[in-house]
Image (cartoon, rainbow, N blue to C red; front, top):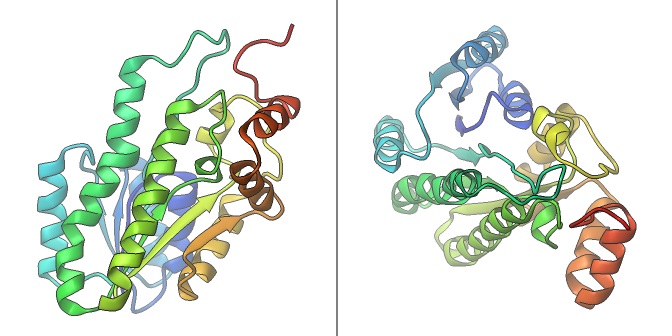
Length: 255
């Protein structure tokens, strides 16, 4: 089985790499930190997997296509998990998100995700097989006042993945949208606001692996946070905004 995972040096990506590592598994792992990536490669190799490490800039679309084409030429991947991402927020003084951070976030979270999928889909469609999983977020259901750009990017990933699933299902290509809640990680720690139902990256990886094996359209967790965020999307906007403020997500300091 041939698996590609981007953002393997992040909490979820690293946990997924180790969860899938086993004899007979060929892993292509991408990460921004070569040193940390090498440590993950060693762990996965020790579990019997064949591992290839890649540290390219995912915002370089041309480099992404060259990388994916090289992987595909040696055999169509069975599973591509597009996990790499970043976050930004309005700041401790609510001054707003710096445009440079917003620009970089959209490039990585949304455009790079689409570029990777766009690069691998032709081969999967020709083969009539393969699976693409994209990391969105429960924040895609309803935008949180403290992280507007992040929420927008993850809502875009959700919509893109759901549209692809409907288009490609008749051709035998599986597409899944992964919607985690709060997963213990540096990126999560840096996010302001409460973090209810926080889970470990290892627990998240198990839930993702199980959902992908079942080809679930949306792999959302943990319960009941996933149910609560879904309700925020369907309730009247004024009610949802009131709830979000009451639980501690405010766009400005409380008076």
